[in-house]
Amino acid sequence: MIISMRLHATKEEVANVCDRIKEFGYKVHSIEGEQRVVIGAVGVGDVTPCLESLEAMPGVEKAVRISAPYKFVSREFRSAKTEIEVAGAIIGRDEFVVMAGPCSVESEAQILESAEIVARAGAKLLRGGAFKPRTSPYDFQGLEIEGLKLLDKARRATGLGIITEVMSDRDVELVAEYADILQIGARNMQNFALLKTLGNCGRPVLLKRGMSSTVKELLMSAEYVVAHGNSQVMLCERGIRTFETVTRNTCDIVAVAVLSELTHLPVILDPSHATGKRSLVPALSRAAVAIGADGLLVEMHPAPEKAMSDGAQSLDPKQFAQMMKDLQPHIELWKRARMTQTAAAV
Ligand code: PEP
Ligand code: MN
Image (cartoon, rainbow, N blue to C red; front, side, top):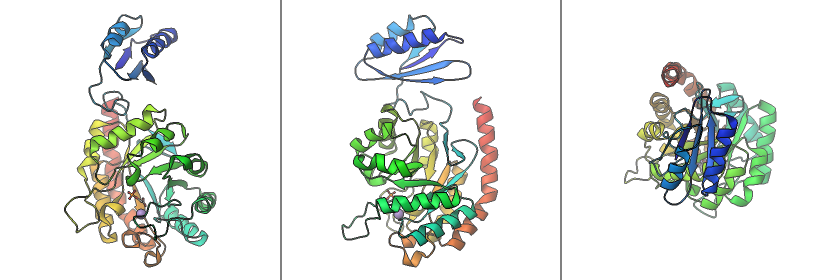
């Protein structure tokens, strides 16, 4: 349900409505706009009795059902885009945010060098996995806590924010101590125990689309995190598995535009995992800008031929700097489009 309060409804009226919703056993999220308060309520069972009761309460303008199965993340619930403030940037507003770095944190020298390279080229966040989800148990699994400490060192050296993956609900508290954004990998998109724990991790979350997941399933997973108390969620398209094998995954580029229609959450594109080939990363990154993504998550390695994971899809320092330069005119157009959309939404 969405409950729109009247203009200038009193604080007491808002509080009474929230209490009534809770009496029905539903969860409450409220958004305080400049003009009015909008309250969202979700729970199990038929909402009709609750709707009818709320409509009769003082201060309520209207109460309507949210028809999408994902409630708090739907555009129906919130028309304005969610903005996520992190590392001096606001994701979801008028800045195209680039997060870049190696697939895995491998050593102090490697991550510090990576951080300097991506910062110099204009990235706002450093990526790098300390806990790695690898298909083979014999492949490099990540430096774990040591990797987190090295990421922290890189942050202090460069001022970049840190985005890194958390694979288990047991590690959420630990990773949240070191990371500015918690990355949930494609393989864990439906790890519901993990998603629930993210509800009170105190950090923004980047949720990657599962390799065999639909857009709707991605939104339902995001709903878990938001319904458990954390509204700072962004989504990431990173390619899905199809019959096509010429690229590592098939990038569902239109999913970015579809998601912008269905949800207010920011959408990031990962051109590295979506293609598996560094030669394709710049073209797909341009496409991400053109289609209105909010940013990129890109793999860059100081020496890709020596990378312990995903070297083939990692840009080298020169390629990354060149791509960032080449994206600039596209980002200028993106900014103009963003400003027009923001003006239209007000
Ligand atoms: C990664 O970002 O290195 C990664 C493992 O990505 P994904 O979960 O999309 O496969
Ligand atoms: Mn990777």
